[in-house]
Image (cartoon, rainbow, N blue to C red; front, side, top):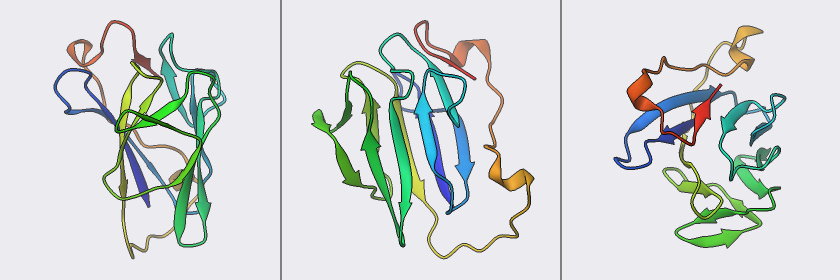
Length: 130
C-alpha cells in the first residue's frame, strides 16, 4: 500500500490522506479525472503520476510547472519511503509513505482513495482538495 499525505503549507502537518493498493496508477492534478484532485492555480490538470514498477514505485512529472524534491525539479524518480514532493515551486507538498510487506484483502472498494475529513481551518486559501 502507498499513502499520500497532503501537508499543511505552513506547519508540515497532515491535512488529508489517500491510501492506494500496490497495483494502482495514481494520478495527481487539478482535473476531476485524477485519483487525487488538488485545486491550486499552480497545479497542472494532470500534474504527475505515481506508477508501480515491480516492487517499487516511479514518480513521473507531467506538469508544465514541474514537480520538485528538495527544491530540485525532477522528471522521473523512484519513490522513497517518507519523501516529500512539491507540485510546482510554490505549490502543495505531499509526503509519500510506503507500507512494506502489508497484505490486505482487495475488494472493489479498496481501489478507491480513502480520505479523512477536513475542517475549514485545514484548507489554505489557494489549495482546495476534492
